[in-house]
Length: 287
Image: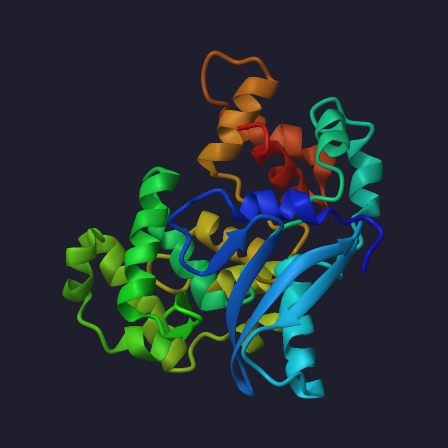
């Protein structure tokens, strides 16, 4: 475990919507279902001691292979392999961030190890409020995702792109997806199903190369690409410049009576070069 990590702050993020369909938070633990080479694995994560995670498998024999799959997922999920001490050194000297990094010390980017999930979630959230975005996601997951029943409870996986690629976009209309979001969602799924797009392809690329590849897909613009690169690949310099939440946070910090311009946002973020993703994460906490 890294020295700078606070499970409670990450758990707080995971509990932000009662409509979340892909994990279940219960007090001080979170239960999650994932795909692995050994099949579907259900596990529980809690904090045994400060900074030490306790993981319990709930439906699988704890073989070395299963344990490795779960550990790898958790490390990606909570961004445990990124050394964020340089960010803290930078933030501790910055008037906008210094109090935030004290208050939320150990908070890390809670990501989406599944790139398809990351991209579709970003598309779902475009130009609507967060509450409605979670409603759409819940409907989509429950309609098209696989599920596992354990002790009377249902646990879901995000829909497989191969399944979604076969859908007519009109199948998403009853879920209240707009025509545009329906088309984009199916189009992104088709890019995965055809092999045009994959996590493995992007993994070896630089931030700029990966962004350019993503933006070739219809429906993925600069914000969506940066969001996915921040959440799935943990590029510390991924910068969702156009993010409305970030603009609202800076409006407060800069004491403006309007939202900041993109030029003003970029001016503030010059100080955070190389750590734009984490600066964004902590500024989001103000709203």
